[in-house]
Length: 330
Ligand SMILES: [Zn+2]
Image 1 (cartoon, rainbow, N blue to C red):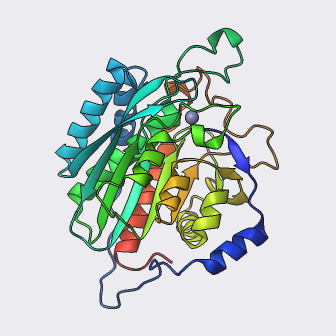
Image 2 (image 1 turned 120 degrees about the vertical axis):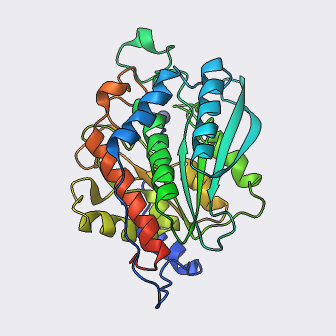
Image 3 (image 1 turned 60 degrees about the horizontal axis):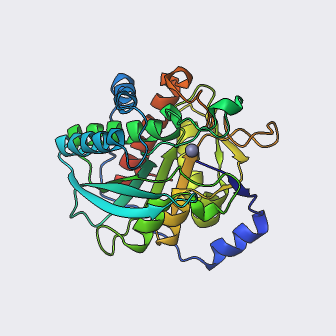
């Protein structure tokens, strides 16, 4: 991920919200007992991150990418999920053709109430923001940009598999997200989610809401309220942030507006699923740079990962699921 696109004005956001139908997020089932939120294991989360890195660069079209895909599929299956792989071909901005695999895994596939969790699993082919120009043609390891979100989702899947939940939960690992043109159009990014939004798997898929995770594992991570999330799903953003703050994580989940990021959640929203982005972006009022210093550089390696960041995000999203399952996410 990518480029900060626009700052969404508050008035346009109000207008859009007033035109959208109410989602069913606030629905409360009166007789349901309050679900217990299980604790995630940060060492397990971290091991899923390290494992992805052990394959090497996960660049679409390479053997390393193929091997990582096979491992992701088998890992999700080992948690008892129903896994489908959506293969597609995409042309990136350089004209190169990249084969892509969106990995879709479902828990409780027959449940009528569902939540969609997503992250991208490919890593960028070029470190074109590296401070050393000689490195601009080299790939990035994507410890944070890619692997952190996937690791959090794997740990959530593992936790859910051991702690039954009265909810359908779907995981999509999108591919070919991070091969876009830094100086070009927003739609050169997120090619896997663009493909999925026009060719949903499962067919006619829908969910109460969606959460995208990207760059959720670095030291000093800060999560502001992202522009498209506030445009399409402000009530979800506010509930998730309030829950996180009530859990004691107000230092991570802050109330500043972090600007609009044309990321996978944009296409999840365009596919009709109100979706939010949890993505580390410094407060624009205090920072010139859109993302962390390591973004799209060789420094995006295991050295910038902080287990506490990984733990906070993984635990908050887990809590969101159980709170939504019993109707107490408010
Ligand atoms: Zn990226």
